[in-house]
Length: 439
Image 1 (cartoon, one colour):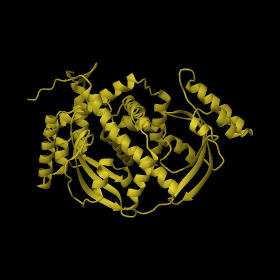
Image 2 (tube, rainbow, N blue to C red):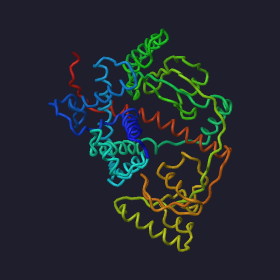
Image 3 (spheres, rainbow, N blue to C red):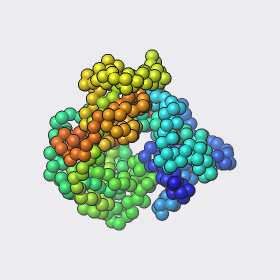
Image 4 (cartoon, helix red, strand yellow):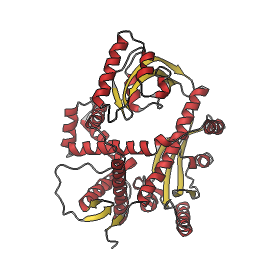
């Protein structure tokens, strides 16, 4: 049973992760004095009020102090936090335009998973939140927004990413020369952003700013301090810390550079479509080959739409499950019923899969099974699934596994890069009126 101290620590890390990676709103406190709200920013048809910004600032300042980070001037924190709030508003607006709606049952399942990970039932988890003054409704709203923003980037970016066989071969050839050497990197990052259609003057100004920052860093300035005060990156308020990342998950722009950098080294400014990047290599690790447990899986997918509701999809899969348990052939049912056309023609067979390839929810359900068993119908963002585990095996990194991992790594890199550009376009195309005085 998780102790109260451990639970509170885990909850704190969860809330911090929401701020670090996506900049979602602070969970509302249930006993807060309501301030006089003035409009401090207009974002298209939405607004940001003073209390919203102040609550975010309080949360950020608390986190920075807990980490022992030196606090930048109030104006810098205010600007960084306001930028995050603006971006969040724009993403939620884009999600609404795209028709993305996260149902209550998906939110409830996500919260149940968080509670279970803390060895608590839902009632105990709710009481633990409220004991800390955290509104359960606010927590639920943040989780719903988290899922909404993830689905937005999946729809607008990830599903449009394509990886060619030639890209996979080139990636594997490059990786081969480094096999057994550096496998993971701890990086810090500063971004000096430029508009999507930046003028030569804007690009030159950004370059000069980046050059000045590099000179300061190489002269002994603290990277975290400058990231907080100067960076336009999403991790600016965390000192630009990207944490430990496997070599095959680094952004493409960093890959060829970091393999030759030494610990503590500061890069020259790196120009991309989003602006100028500066990175610091804090540390790296050597790599070892690993044995992975693969799963051979097949599934039937029923997608939901205006015609097929969630209840209809689940009911259809429950009926198919009973037929399979009664002796009907899974392959035949998948061919005639599955909406995943790429696997339906193979009887729903997804082949041997390596951890991290399938959706987290899908892998979670498969992990519960013994070979031959069926899941209950379960839902992901693609619809409702009925899956069967055929076999498991411990397997060394073969050529096919390496190709699958390479394809995923390339896809992840492209997604990260395109996501940055997509978010930059959202902001560049928006009407934003900031009403905070510079004084």
